[in-house]
Length: 284
Ligand SMILES: Nc1ncnc2c1ncn2[C@@H]1O[C@H](CO)[C@@H](O)[C@H]1OP(=O)(O)O
Ligand SMILES: [Mg+2]
Ligand SMILES: [Mg+2]
Image 1 (tube, rainbow, N blue to C red):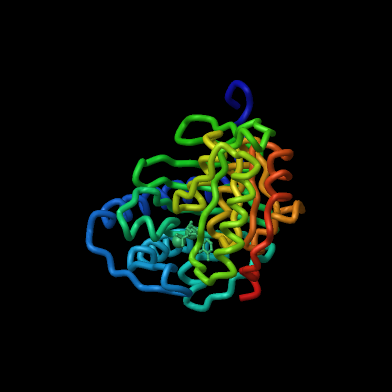
Image 2: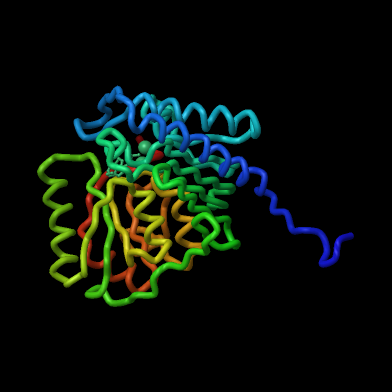
């Protein structure tokens, strides 16, 4: 036996390593496609976009992981859009967004990421988010800390809403009632004298910025489980909070989230928000 005893190998290490490798391969494909002509289609609205690269990258990720882990289940954005069931059971399940920030990708705006989360018994075990254009890899395993490349991540300790930099996303719904609520939520936070509200076009990268302490809070209605799964582990392992907009525990399928460096900040944001109803991922 080596000095210090055998290395501790977690049950899901092999899966984590596979996620890192496939996220990097997917990043290469996305980087190459970023400067080329894109074929863009719409999904649920004129602002809900998909390109052939979203589908190609999703296929690449799932076929590689399925080869290595044939008994595992998969939830992914483009398969769900094509009618696959979006159901989180107790089986080992990969939750995949092949391109988070598709609208950015279409416009050549460089906030584009691959997001791969992994849950067992409905508990998130690890998350890998690859910022494709800056070649940054955000990653965390439950109980083992969060990292960006080799740098350990630490979420903000801010508790004062009037000193907060807050991130959110606009999403793809454009009906007047949704837009009114969306803008009124932003207005409430600005009236509370938050330092700023930012929209960067990628939920998962915004959540990673929160994990890195570059922002104090994040909220969104309408995002999906694949936007959230990987980054949730990364934020929690960076010492942050991820919860439901009602103030209760996070439901990955409920399409709403508040995240912050501190519980106090998360609660203040949740209290300032009016809910926007979006349905559930597993009841579509
Ligand atoms: N219907 C919706 N409402 C809110 N956000 C959504 C959404 N659909 C996707 N998003 C995500 O929110 C951000 C932009 O609004 C992106 O991260 C986008 O993910 P996507 O690029 O994978 O589609
Ligand atoms: Mg997404
Ligand atoms: Mg996507």
